[in-house]
Structures are given as structure tokens and as C-alpha cells.
Length: 249
Ligand code: AMP
Image (cartoon, rainbow, N blue to C red; front, side, top):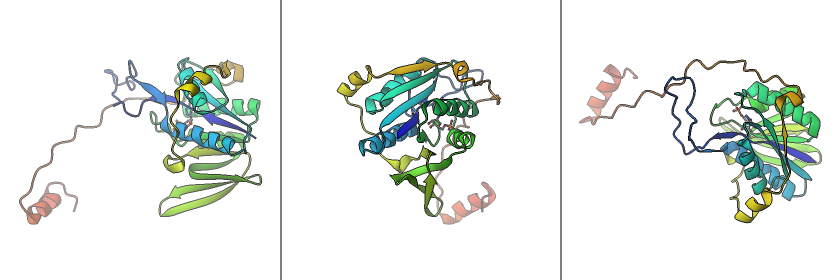
């Protein structure tokens, strides 16, 4: 069984995102970029399935500029066998990503595709769902547990009020939630080994996909600055302020 895992190069989660001066987008100039954290979890899960002997090959796919090669090398240093870069300098929105991933799935014929539940830059939470729909495959989103046995996949999902357990027919699409696993640290010898692993580059046109944006961003702005708190002398004053100033009770 082959597993395909989608890895996005996104703004590093430790960086405070700031809008560009003209408010057109998040300013990415000279900003540290890393693998989207949920995608690290997706990669870890794919490798664990392979280490358990259930998968024979793991392939990482990234869509974006040339620098996504670094993201793919990180996935390979974690343990993925090879990488595919769909190279484009366009702003590729979730629908286009899902169409490109579908084209890669048609070529590679994996039985399982694992993605992150959402990219922390656009917070769309759309790509996995749209990919499953385009493929006509089962989907297990927000996975907090994954088990593969006898040709079916059991996915545990954290939902309001408890854990939902789904049994999916293979092939399937899974999106990884935070508590699915704890991704491993990449060790130096594995970084060296990853440099020698195969990395293919394709263009969206090779896959016959039109990546033209369907949405336009009107404005990106910082949230309003928070005002400092005040101390109230007693409960009565607090209730008075909540009722008459904040008008929340
Ligand atoms: P989103 O729907 O944008 O929140 O992204 C959900 C997931 O889709 C991410 O966690 C990735 O696994 C995958 N994904 C989104 N965009 C890309 C991309 N440009 N390249 C590779 N994977 C992507």
C-alpha cells in the first residue's frame, strides 16, 4: 500500500503574522517559513503506518514555489521515501490544491492520502474534504486516532461531547488533528540521507489543472489592540460594570 501525504510550506507557527502596509496580504518578506504543523503530524502518521509494515511506500507532495523543496526534504528527513513538488509561484487556493492533489493521486495510485486538518496560514480547512469529494473516496477528518486492519480504516475523531469512531472503506482521505501523534525530531544523519532521496518536480500544466484563483482577498488587517483591564473594588461594582458598561448580563 502506498500513502501520499500533503505538506504545505507555511509561515512558522512561532512568527507573529503581520499584514502588509497596503493590507493586501500577510507580509511574508524575510519571515521564517516551515512545514505546516498539522502536516508534520500527517507525515508522522504515514511513517508510523509504514514502520508497522502496513504501507510499502510513503510519498510527500507539496504545491508552491521552489522553496517547498525544503519542506519536502524535511518530510523525507522524517522518513518519507520520496517527494513531489508541484511548482508554481501563483497563490494556490484550496480548490486548486485539491485538484492538483487529485491529479497526483491519479498518477501515483495511493490507497491512503493524509493531509493536515488545516493550514495555519489561511485556516481554510477545506483541502482534504474537497480532495475526498473530487476522488469520490471516504473521508475521516480531524483524526485523533487511525487504525488500519483488513482493508478498512478506523478513524477516531474528537467532536463536541466525546469521541466519534468511523469505519472507512479504502481508499480514503484522512486529515490529521493535533492529538493524532507527536511528530519525531529530525536527526542530522537523516537530514543528510534525505538529500539523496528522489524529488520530482511537475508544473500544474503537466497535471492539466487550472490554478487561477476563484476568490480574491479584499483586506487583511490586524485585530483591534486589546485595552488594559481595570480592578474593581467589589463584586457589586463588577456586576454593575458588566450590566451597564459591557452590557453582557
Ligand atoms: P487548508 O484547506 O488550506 O486549511 O489545508 C489543509 C491541508 O491541505 C494542509 O494541512 C495540507 O496538508 C494540505 N495543503 C493545503 N495547501 C497545500 C499546498 N500548497 N501544498 C501541499 N499541501 C497543501
